[in-house]
Image: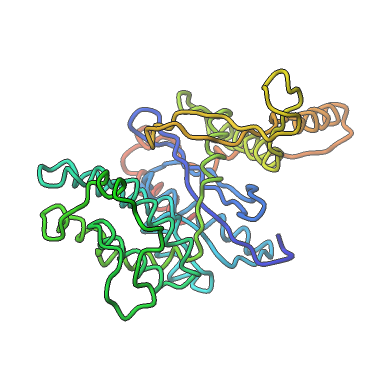
Length: 358
């Protein structure tokens, strides 16, 4: 990673059994290789809250990479308020981009909420199309923030069945093919002066949203990082409690598993009699998507391999035979004990001591 400028994606995963989160695992991924390059496990302890852990984990990971000599050109995160403040005040020399998926999901949720009112029910038909339009605007803007905002605002014309409009901008008409009479009849178009349209305008033209749109011009998303989070659940399920050392070790195993299998090739048909397709045909699978409420086609990859476990077992045997020297320090000592068990006069001193570490 030191050989060139890198684009890093970061996101936190909270261990949330029941209604509380005790740990926050913040991970950074190199988007070029899709490999995990750093992670930290932070534990809730007074006076820290679960929401503050993401900020702490993010800053520790960035400092680790910078001290290692990695030239970070772009950092992609969600719109976490504390992370944005750190990037603005401490790492202003690094370009901060937002995850397109998180931003589109936020807008979609607002439209879904608006569609539950009596006057905005028609908006429910356009939720997925509006989210797709945001993805398309970010992908085709050519990293031009003004062009992205212009394309995003054109949604308000298209949704009323107006596909050409007078403007001083270069983008004056929809780029899709002309719609057939059947397509026009099938769509539930909005009326320009209807209450539903007024509600949609408030969402689409929101000043904070238009400002944030300018930070998705590079069209980066953390989909691969979400896949890694799914791998983590195989090693540290949320249904069980682990101490801090167990969380670190299990996350290390998850990172090794992900990094070893991230470059798997797409599976091919090896026996035409089994699948009915010619040998060498790339394989896919069909599954039902709960998010889209429809069947989707997904790529089928070669089976994963956990051969890295053999390397670990070999080192264990070498340690047992004193052929390999190693050291380990528990991280449980870095966190204070349960504050409820400490006499009241000593609690404030404990809190001040813990705050000084950060």
